[in-house]
Length: 581
Image (cartoon, rainbow, N blue to C red; front, top):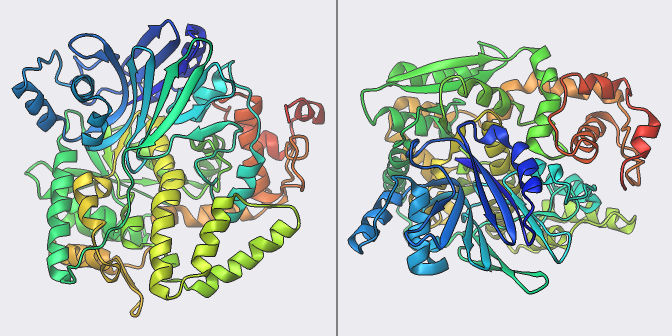
């Protein structure tokens, strides 16, 4: 696990150095540099696979191909054995070299054979290939503000740190966030900064005077239900696939733990991990009270299996004190609903280098109430958004397209399938996976997500709708609950528990943000940066934190008193007006 960054089109070591320094938290174990006539790239490393031999960049046998890589390839051992049978000799045990050697033999077709979570930069002569895994588990941002250079990085703060980048608020993303809770179509809150789409390869080719960029999709994740309507058979296949995914993701040279909320998703992972061997699994829980329902179910899991638990209780002053750091980590106008991840990752770093998380299960099995919604609900929302458009506040065309698809659904089942499609491709990537990665990596911990393992997801994506959600009975995660039933009564307890989710762990503290002094805040920066209306309350504070850190501060980690300073309107009007619009 690493952080990667660079500038392509211009060789500028100073720019690359500043970018990677902004992500030093992602790689406490070393730094790597790669220079060429037309690029400068860097990486920081968190050693997981082959700690002694896996320093990057890594080359193929001919040293024609160089690789910088963030992530894990879970089938690298099988690919290595195949390559060795073809006569390829390896100099390390790491998965990065497998990428380099496989690409040297097969070209970009090699990327389609990788099973794992990855963001890769492949340097091959006059071409650089930027690649991102099919689900978008690992983040990769790009910024091309001219015809002569392109910046790429694992985090936005690295782009903000570059003198080759001018940080400006993307107001279209602000509008889209207001409508759907996150920016649309891979955009971000900074102008000209985009996510590389999941399952995509961007090729940057050197020209005589400028660079040429092109993209191609190598994988599209989608539901393709088969004709198997046997729930017991599908549940058995799911359990076997999940057990395989947990086993191969638990195979790790570093210490590994599990995030345990007490819900079905994390409990199933924990139980399967505990069944693997005699060594107890270490789970970490976060709550605001030792009497919470979440902790009680987690304790049931620990009493029934070889699981040890660390319970991290959060105090109100800790919660408020984390707001500025959370805004820096999330790199967005935060809702602060994911703050439990902050304390979870902080605690995890004291014990482990790798953590397992239940991300992805909700999107595969319909874990949100929206999956049980109706077309008329979408029509009402479309009408509200249309009224905004009439006032000049126009969401991205992709949002309008999705709302029209939902409103035009001819049945509730069709409506549910459209929700599955939208959440799997948009919300999961742009919201949940990005945030999970950034929280853990802020503390130098790798986050693995077995539910999105290629083996497990391959089975889940073939389930018919009725094995994901039973709309008639209002049951969600049907097949996953059936699979968990065979794990014993504790798993059944977790399956029957009302869905609360990790954010509920600090629910009382989160609701305090709706009260003074937060509710009385009026944004300091919004008007000077071009907002058409004042931002108030916690949203106004969240905007100010984003503007202060990523527009004024160019991605630097904020000081601990920033929230108090903003609430006291500590910044002068002159300073706010000096920001670029």
